[in-house]
Image (cartoon, rainbow, N blue to C red; front, side, top):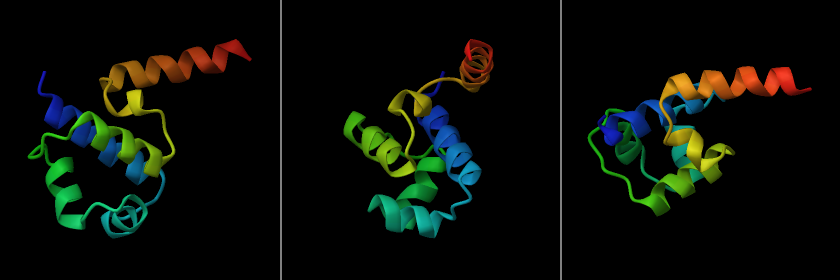
Length: 83
């Protein structure tokens, strides 16, 4: 599994879910739009600190940016059942 692609896809998925453009997310996160574009395209190898800072800017748990998408849907399903 290519972690660069995984993190990039997850960042893009969460950013779009929150209705943010790359430019808006750049303003929130402090990372340049060019960096975010490269990251989302799997061309960057973010550090643990970068992943954490992106998660904070997106207001999600940092693990959400590191897990395969299948696990996101499983977590959402299990949270719905807990009520």
